[in-house]
Length: 343
Image (cartoon, rainbow, N blue to C red; front, side, top):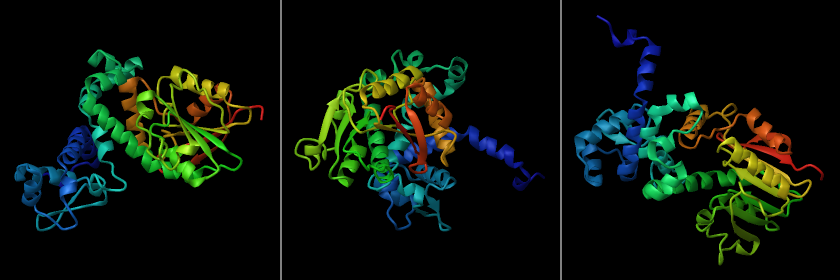
């Protein structure tokens, strides 16, 4: 009789991979149900947790057992469940919470898009307009407000968590002004202004984005006197001069948009200005599985791509920038230093 131990490891691993949707769906269900928030540091039975979050205990036990196979929660010998490092990050109140990242990566539209990955690979284009009749961000903001809110929360979480890492990495010697291009709510800019009392900064992003800027930067905030909030689209123009420009995690659109943004920065910047591009690289990171998966998702939804080191350096050089050091920010991000010629 064939035993489990004689099952070839590659065959079992492939079986697990093709059921990857079940794992993603289980993480999403736990995040939506608030299971991690209901579990404190005391081991709990499924029945206790089910009562707390108002679900049926037996299906919840099955969900938790599945997640425990992947290290999200752990089942004890007496059938109770406890937190792991990963399950704690599904809590809303965790300082390094990934709850909204988990929800964003498993939003309803993703389940329609993934099965059409072969089409996107054949064409090299997004499948989103064919699926929903609208481009991705138009659909998100016009037809799926709940998903748009999840996106905003996920981006806020990600930005807050990396802002301090960026601020710690950057050497601002000789820099008196900085522009955070496509900087979202301005968490990176706020972190820089807090660290460097002599610094002045501008946050440039779309009107609907900067309307929700970090309160520290807005009127009445502690950094407002040194901060300027500028609504605008960096793909159309960058109407501000500064000593340093920061472009973080936005050069993932189609190539034309990426090239236009970089050219706009070079045209606006004074000679010698520093331009720091911060991105996830698909060929130089400990987080390859996550980053390459996000790369495919970008292909599906906007026809974009994560960059290799070579592709990003190439685009920066084509725009006229002189690229220098490439430094890791954290396990997910790299900072590519460059300067505008002529300084």
